[in-house]
Image 1: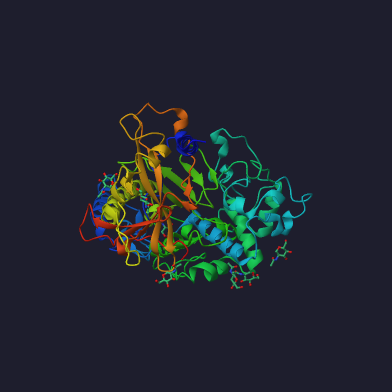
Image 2 (image 1 turned 90 degrees about the vertical axis):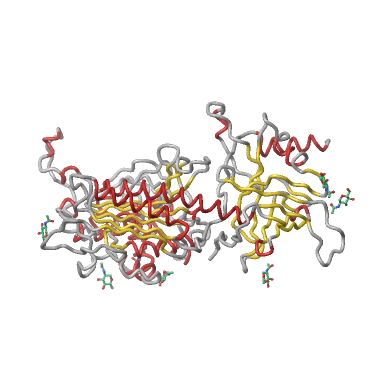
Amino acid sequence: MHHSTLLACLSTLSFASAKCYDPSPAFPVPLWPSGAKDLKPAFDGIAAKLHALTAAEGANKYDTSSFSIEVTSNTDTLWRYYHTARRHNASRPGDTHVDGNSVYRIASITKTFTTLGLLYQHAAGNLSLDDPVSQYIAEFADPDSSGRIPWKDITLRIMASQLSGIPREMGQADVINEFSDPTQLGLPPVTREGLPQCYEYDHLHRPCTKTELLDQMKKKAPLFAPNQRSTYSNLNFELLGLVLENVTGLNYSDYMRQAIFAPLDMASTSVLKPASDEHAVLPLGQFFWDVDEGIHSPTGAIYSSSADLSVYLRYVLTHYNALATGVNWMLPASWTEGLSSFYGMPWEIFRTDKILRESKRPVTFVTKAGGVPDYFSRISIMPEFGLGLTILVGGSHDLLEAAQEIVTVELIRAAEAVVWRDVDSAYTGTYQAYSSAANQQPPLNSSLTITSSPSTGLLLMTFISNGTDVFTTLLAEYAGGARDDTHSWRAQFTPTLLYKNETTQQGEIWRLVVVPERLGEGQEAVWDGFCSTDVDPASYAGLPINEFVFWREEGVVELPAWRVRMRRVDSAADEGGGEKLVVQPRHA
Ligand SMILES: *[C@@H]1O[C@H](CO)[C@@H](O)[C@H](O)[C@H]1NC(C)=O
Ligand SMILES: *[C@@H]1O[C@H](CO)[C@@H](O)[C@H](O)[C@H]1NC(C)=O
Ligand SMILES: *[C@@H]1O[C@H](CO)[C@@H](O)[C@H](O)[C@H]1NC(C)=O
Ligand SMILES: *[C@@H]1O[C@H](CO)[C@@H](O)[C@H](O)[C@H]1NC(C)=O
Ligand SMILES: *[C@@H]1O[C@H](CO)[C@@H](O)[C@H](O)[C@H]1NC(C)=O
Ligand SMILES: *[C@@H]1O[C@H](CO)[C@@H](O)[C@H](O)[C@H]1NC(C)=O
Ligand SMILES: *[C@@H]1O[C@H](CO)[C@@H](O)[C@H](O)[C@H]1NC(C)=O
């Protein structure tokens, strides 16, 4: 086969069939070493908007709402904003000076703690995520007596991923309990015969017992076959709590404290109600602070503060791919409705291309929301940005939604701008081959130039290898033609987040990918949106041809397949920076 034909085949395989824009991640995880300084203007702007929201909503809409918001990096809380309700219950005000230690009920955020416990047990070999739940709940072991749900086919992993297909509730969300006369809603008259006598069926006086829960489960039918389609279910987590109790021999509350709250030093966090109201956020009219969730605890009981959740988010940000073999805790397990939303384990994941103004690169929010009467919350992890966000509200649900829109959009736009400034000073410029002391040969005529911008990422602009312009030879072959006005592409770097030397975290490994420039509105074919990922298209004599290793301390880039090292001889944005952007340890 002729050379160029072979290359054409390769390029067809690798690049020509789709318009895969905007590789992600486009930069190493920022560590925000200068703390909040870089983001201060954004935080000031956010604070002003939050202030306006609570002050100006006229009609005292948020008079009885308090909230706590914190943004954390991998290592430090970068920003805090607290707001205290203007009106309290005079006879039981709770905390009237809200701060990072103020405690809220975090409701379904609890599910992430239950799942973390499950991951610990999986890592310890006390259970496998792929065991059926019937292995840990004796009542489900016998298919003849355990009802219509196929418990033997429901694994712990698919329960934690909201994929079990079992019903949502037992003991909650029955309209019969929420209206004094449901027949006025057009519902037929019914008796309470055979209904449970606990939790919401008992005005929240008493949680259901394990026996009541499991007896009711035997009467329930599945919504979907296991692993067929995701749907939100509290029962998944109530049952996973029982699984944890089974394998650890501890009750849920003790296990959470011993395995998670104590090791992470989350002193304001508990499954059970705190002994005093001192730090309790008690919005006027609330009643849920005092509700004992009992058997329902693993799905929504936990009490916590924004300061503690910042600690938790830092832990998750730095450990999510090192918790258990075979588990990357940030990845989706199934899609939900629409193009942008997914369930993880048990995360609620949102990917949007509407935040960044200069590129269509999606921003990923790995979140979990919580809601019980008068307490609304969401934690969000932005893994590409090395940021975590906690929003806890006691009071109005609208406030959570409004604050979330303001904080996430402004924060990510500002973070993106800071990142490109730092990338520019750290990597861009001209690099030239040099002679090492060991090798007295004159240097090769090899050089490259690198630029960056928020719209195009970190770009290879020119690449001469031993006198040959690689852009008109190899790269053009890969891209399916030379760069010109009608056939436009770019050569962009994407970080692997690995190092040549993991011990010293030196020698950042990146890959170069050929990216087609975006077509104008309306010019794309439907299937242009279909993108597989392949950052390892070819090798040269056994080494990856598109691997670039940045030895930043030396200002050197190494191209292993090309057997060359080049030194930065100038930099496009020389402001003496270059130390700001640090790749995060992935296996800490
Ligand atoms: C855990 O479940 C298994 C299987 O149902 C059962 O044999 C065992 O006694 C349970 N252990 C505890 C501590 O509940
Ligand atoms: C594994 O299970 C045993 C027995 O229940 C328990 O003692 C041990 O603490 C568990 N391991 C972990 C990491 O929780
Ligand atoms: C959990 O177990 C501990 C120790 O056995 C006990 O003191 C505590 O009351 C239990 N908590 C709950 C909620 O059952
Ligand atoms: C105020 O607190 C008392 C208990 O101390 C409670 O009985 C009452 O219902 C509360 N009122 C409101 C409006 O929350
Ligand atoms: C550079 O190119 C010359 C021919 O132009 C060739 O002889 C030599 O082997 C090449 N050296 C390297 C290190 O690529
Ligand atoms: C290096 O190679 C490039 C591309 O072939 C050529 O334009 C340039 O003149 C060469 N430089 C030197 C110093 O030989
Ligand atoms: C990493 O760097 C340290 C310190 O320079 C060195 O001792 C070690 O051998 C290096 N490891 C690898 C895999 O190169």
